[in-house]
Image 1 (spheres, rainbow, N blue to C red):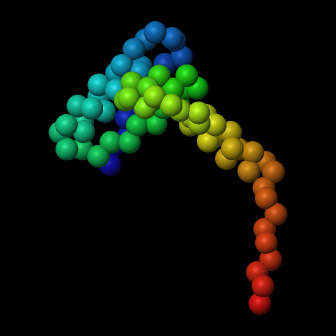
Image 2 (spheres, helix red, strand yellow):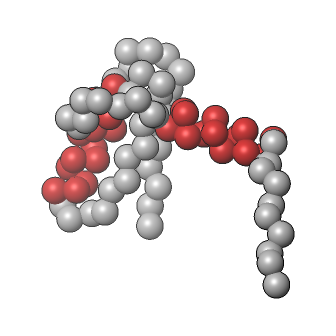
Length: 79
């Protein structure tokens, strides 16, 4: 398994376009591809035709962090 990440702090550097085109090209070659859109604007998600997105990966990561900081109390197992 290979992991490819595309990152750059500068806006307008072509990260979304590169990620989309690379993932589509790899998928067409029969590779299994997982694309994670980590940007709050979700432009990569919209590029794949997903029109309504109220939850992004940023929301998911915030929720995970909140659970780690304030874990839910565990229920005691009944005997």
